[in-house]
Length: 465
Ligand SMILES: NC(=O)c1ccc[n+]([C@@H]2O[C@H](COP(=O)([O-])OP(=O)(O)OC[C@H]3O[C@@H](n4cnc5c(N)ncnc54)[C@H](O)[C@@H]3O)[C@@H](O)[C@H]2O)c1
Ligand SMILES: O=c1ccn([C@@H]2O[C@H](COP(=O)(O)OP(=O)(O)O[C@H]3O[C@H](CO)[C@@H](O)[C@H](O)[C@H]3O)[C@@H](O)[C@H]2O)c(=O)[nH]1
Image (cartoon, rainbow, N blue to C red; front, side, top):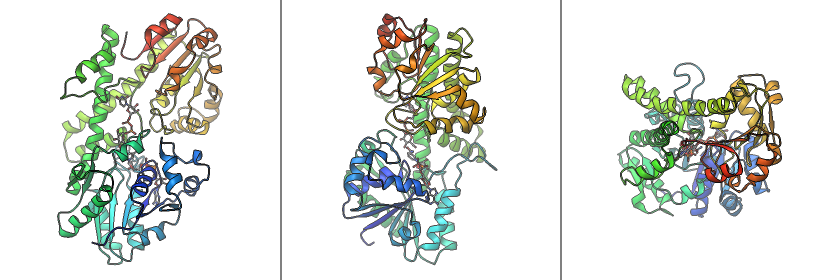
């Protein structure tokens, strides 16, 4: 196999952008082109103002600033990039289907199929096609079929190389990856393709951390990894509800169980519920796949992770309502944080959306502050729910840039994202200007209970009575 010198990535999103930037940084001799059909997104990737890249990730703008125009390019010329590349990563979105068979559970593969057809149409020489998107097990078969039957008789080798980065720590996760997974055929050409992709990662990762498997194990491992991670969050969150009834403390429990090396300490932070574009989507997909093979018990088991997460979000909202004397109509509630976790501007499936929607159903007056999420995004998230008209959302919700002023005459504050800056606020001043009794509902266990109670707040921390 020839040495790889040109790669392209279809999809310039949360995965394609950071992943390709890191490859460009670590492999200066490889030309990396990231393409997208979304012109606006590509224009943002090419902006001279690096603070305005389409996604926010610590460390990303420095890498883009260093490599862009040298061996990292962002373009809308999809066909040209496919034609020139020896290796093509598909990193387009694979959302939950909103129509037809599998609606609400199965992954929508229309964007993947479009990419496969496009590659088949354009390619004039042999290519390695890499599934970077998260896909249902056996998708590579469908891609192979499309490529083999609609192409120009060129040979395609398909690899599965799922991405495990988490948002907010994407660059760190890519540079210090726990492992890289490469699934491919066990044929000589399959093995050569796996080694060619491995050689890229070997620029910065030790070979032992690059795992090679068959395609199906690789595809399914990605869904299983997310299911296990989400399951840990749901497990600890269900116990947080029990703690609130029993005077046990969820943090002490996380610590106590996490010390067992078989359990381990990570991913045991109780919260208002997990969000993000992946956990729910990927578990629903796993559930759908299990059900489609008649494995009802398997499907039901994993579905419970999502049911528990929905319960955590609604439980949090209901607690606000009942603590505020069962009526929040017209009451001013300030929401700190809209992103699904700190250090990202991504709001997909954020717990804040469900919690605020429940509060709006009770006609609360909501003021939202998030340091990285734009006002338009917040309204778009609420409008998408279709619970009420866009006009009603704009009457009931205000988005502010001034988190401290927002609390004047407020009845309550709900902390829904764990942004570090919330810890630094002058909570005494905030207390003084709020209506009394002043409530803080901490869905991220961010603040110190004793300090908050000493100031005078009615302070609720998830997982603690
Ligand atoms: N977001 C994450 O943290 C994360 C992490 C690991 C894996 N994943 C998986 O990676 C995939 C991509 O996720 P994302 O968050 O980057 O999505 P995204 O929505 O941010 O980006 C996808 C991009 O693909 C583009 N696109 C769609 N169809 C196209 C086509 N035919 N040609 C060119 N461009 C096209 C879209 O315009 C969009 O900009 C998904 O399968 C997701 O499950 C995501
Ligand atoms: O102890 C914890 C850990 C996480 N969360 C929440 O869980 C969600 C997901 O967090 P995280 O996993 O850190 O972020 P993602 O960017 O969604 O990353 C997950 O989803 C990606 C997309 O598939 C995978 O690549 C990553 O490995 C996987 O961690 C967020 O709302 C977190 O606040 C908790 O509530 N408690």
